[in-house]
Length: 399
Ligand code: FEO
Image 1: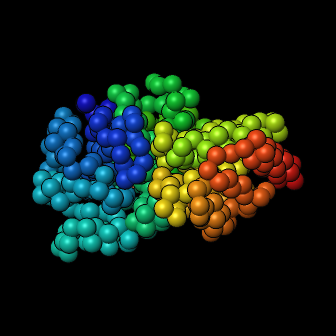
Image 2: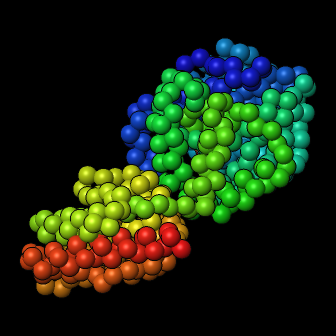
Image 3: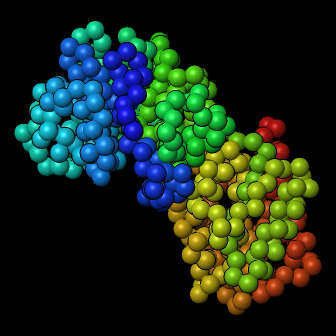
């Protein structure tokens, strides 16, 4: 991959990770990219870097533009290792005059690399560093998604370098949003938001408001992963506003795991009840659906219905994994219900109900528990549970 000039004198340097399939629990079935940006001006600046194994790719691309030692400033918008893993090696090679970062960025760099004598320069929101013809305006984006995170805005180019925000885990040879299928791009952006940013939705809403308030003109958004938004920046900003408000529709998920198909039969009956109420519903068997794909579908689903068999006095392990993951993402304003089969003790349903209550998911309908194998009446109770959830969805959304 060679550098791509995205604005005059501004280059995108991408390391494409075609093979990665797991990003600390997020399934990256189509790989990812790590994007670094280089501005060549009277002073040259490199914005973020790449994951450590891709250092030689980055250096090769820098050398296609300039001698690395001619880079004056290393700007660290985010310290997570996929963007900062090769910072020590880069500093040895570039010998930057300044390492520009937020206050929390300096702390995080120190805690990662334990170097006190690097030439740190701390910036805060509103600070401007002049490069020559271009300048960089900094916006701290604390907890989006780490304490150190910040954006770099280049007003002369109406360009926002947005760190992780607005990114996608999608390995492509294309660099711009208008070079790929927009529906697929938005699906990757949605998965990224659902799995990485959902729990920081309040901060996203606040930040979008602040950006509007400052009247920053943004023509192009350049994230550290995936495609650059040059034709559809308004589309991704609008989508983030909606996702941050946790807007949901007439949609439900029936999420289950099963031992001997009894809980699966119950899941199908609940599904059928939801359909009776005209609810768009997805049946998600955790034996085939990855937790991060379930979390993506949950982004715009009003109801989350969970079912598990009981195994050794517990819910099935995949269900425990799913609930732990979802709890961390903090979906809000959802309703839920539970069901499951058991042999003699039957703890799973109560455990799931407790987990949903802890997530502040409002439980509707009576939980349905079935000993061993459901009879016709048991399945009828599951259909009724689906109808109850469907009616509650409509009632909530029509309010
Ligand atoms: Fe792409 Fe938070 O790292």
